[in-house]
Length: 179
Image 1: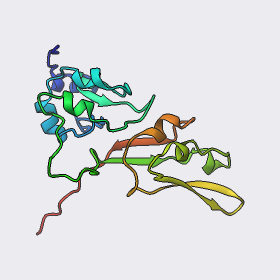
Image 2 (image 1 turned 45 degrees about the horizontal axis):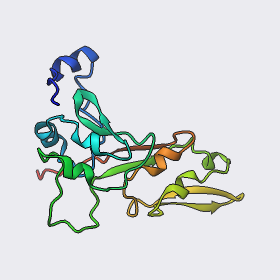
Image 3 (image 1 turned 90 degrees about the vertical axis):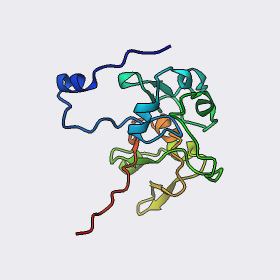
Image 4 (image 1 turned 180 degrees about the vertical axis):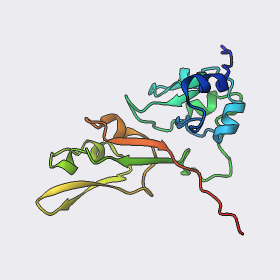
């Protein structure tokens, strides 16, 4: 099932979004870089149909994106297998434990434990234990994120009672030009 391709430049003009970056959408695991993904993806919805966690949804322009509101990703690979145009592609030379995406997780200042309220929902949901709690003065346990352990699964996001966790695509490394 295909979708008509919208005139994105007109859409951006009408929204006043000309100067903003094209997207901050989180694409499904193993997505090509944004430009290649938008060129390769046919918006067939096959990845959406096979996602048992129901976290892949049709986003802006009909392209699939991730929403961690209800659940996290278990990296089952069903979306990867379903993607016939290969907009989702795993390098066979990558190690089996290589992460399928690069996401940046942030814990906001309104986090309950940072404000003296006992809550450890994110740490309990975090299977790789990338979020742990450090006891600080006054007996308050504050969340700590170990970015090296984080898989970007999104389980922490879905369980946070006040939505103090944000997840964004990590910025690609910038190369400095030699003068």
